[in-house]
Image (spheres, rainbow, N blue to C red):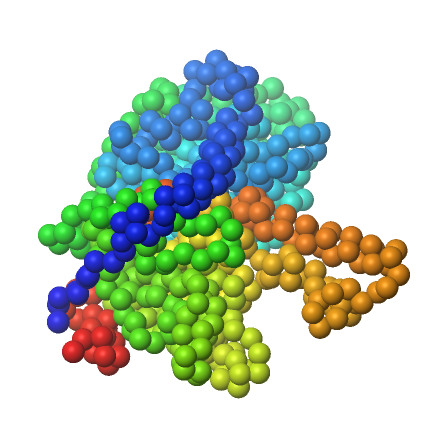
Length: 576
């Protein structure tokens, strides 16, 4: 029973797609991912070389240089929230790349950590609209995974001209400090390095941390010297008010003072080294991380850019799972859904993915119906599998490419509303970490049911192909102008001017909805956590799953001998 019957899946690229199709799809996706790389680079540049030079002139590092020095050599940063506020303009033509803060999963001294670093090249690390929300989202990820959280603080407080959009409300700036408190209450280590201006909220942010280090240039104040001069006519500097001399030696609000950025970062690494090491190797047992038999980069040529074209979902799994091995559960039920267990980075995870193309219809033998849609059996199947993963402590990876729920008279008579509610209840009450990937379509209530962001996955990733919406632009245009169309969706009007007006209106609706489905729009307004390249998916998922196993003792992780999965397989005829 302890045996997990992983079997090979997938086929070589030559069998999965002919060379012409593969090359065309790879080129089309490659163009989109080149744009992704370019837009990332623009965000990473902050406000540009002039502002980088200003930081360096003060003898300081930029936020991204600090993060690069903090992480283990040879490891990469897994950033989240890169495109928050992307394309938005505030005040006098000002932008806030990445909302002025870097939030990223980083490996430090062999432990995964959440790093939150104010971008001191963007308005001295000010908090813009959505900056607090972005920080809180990163803190929530850290809390869910119990990751040590490291704050690299260099923050001049709220960007005051836009304060009304970041100060009040349930996710306003003050909620950051509540998240500090919840992390502390849950025993999550918090470390803070204070590198420069830390005014008002920027001053509060480090205080609840377990260790606070300050450089000689740093200060933490409720109000800076300029405000105090105006209010009390006192001639002071901010260092006089809240520098390391005050907070290390008098107030006790900081623990250590160090000469510069480089020394402070070394001190933070030393603190992380004192923490318990990762439990991931224990849970791997004798299994190591082994690349898929079929290279992950081949996904770039196997997934059509056109969302109306299908692909083989097993080929996706075969390029994500270690050695391209997979244990499918309940294969004979709910053909539109594939669910099962595989290793990723040597660690077990549950996978749920929509099958594309045409699938069988158990209610009408011999008939076929579209995949990428949730029908009754598929909903029940993934609900049971989700509960089993939660029981066994397996993190769940949801791979969405979904058009929504089945609709119509038969669907309602079968009670899809109730089955869907059961699935939503299951995902809402799971305690195991869940990670959601929007491969292409993420439509309607299907997006919700498959652990979309409103159902609290730890992280939701999008690709350059993602289309997040209630319905497609053309469908919505038809619905909007329904009373002016016949049963075949042709315009009823005979008058040429009226026909042109309807055509123009429908085209306008379709174009607006298509623009809204752009993944960068979702990322801008925090409707998804990060846009990643398809070739990056496996590395992101390997990192996230390893984080799920790092911290021990806070959630159920059962050994494979007592998995609920085995019972599920026997009861559904999967083991004979």
